[in-house]
Length: 273
Image 1 (spheres, rainbow, N blue to C red):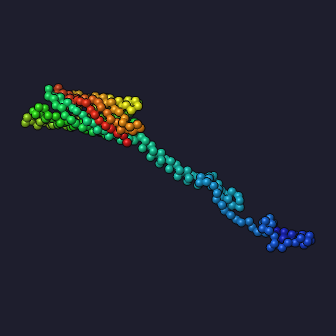
Image 2: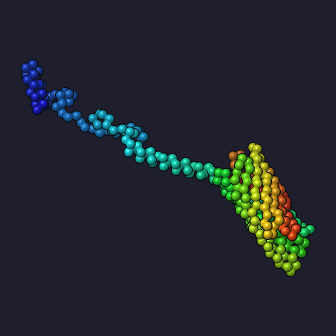
Image 3: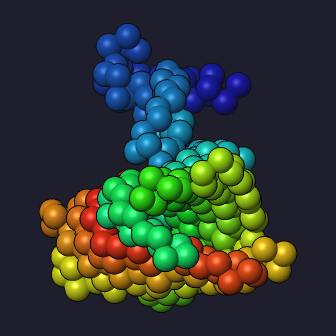
């Protein structure tokens, strides 16, 4: 009704003024101005990946960044991604494995008998933050003047906690020995704990390691201890490949005052990844 009245009034005015122009000849902007035609209804999405808006008739009607549901879903996805990325990076940064091989020229002394042998001592350490789990194996085959043979196998599992440059903890020891003397074949074994203390100092490419352990088995072993000193050199800058030389002594004293001593110089190589 309103539209009809406007058209009638406009027509009368144009006729009276003598400037009548047919509707079909009016330009488009005039048609829109007098509301003869409807404006195009358009929907447009503009913005960046994180900020988007929906426009209708050139008016911003929705802001996605202010839409709580969409914002919550977006944040949830991003937080999950961030946490996963942080978790992966954190684990890689805090966890490491260090295998080590040591050659030892061992002198074995027991009851006045002595023999020298060449042995390889393998070990591997698993480190997570300040915690270390280490496994090592010590094997010696000594032949005393062709009169007696001693085969010693020593397995160790250690847990260490790092405080500053000190690693302190304890280890589970499994010692197995077999003695062949003339026609006598004697076997023995012992399982006992040891208290561990290991220290490490670094200066540029130099690495100094020293320490040892002490323990006992109240049934068979009176004392079991080790002390060592290693001087290492980091072969490449910004790398964990280390070449080291040193000295080690590992001794067992049984309840019957039998003392078995392993000692000698060492040469080793280790890496961390």
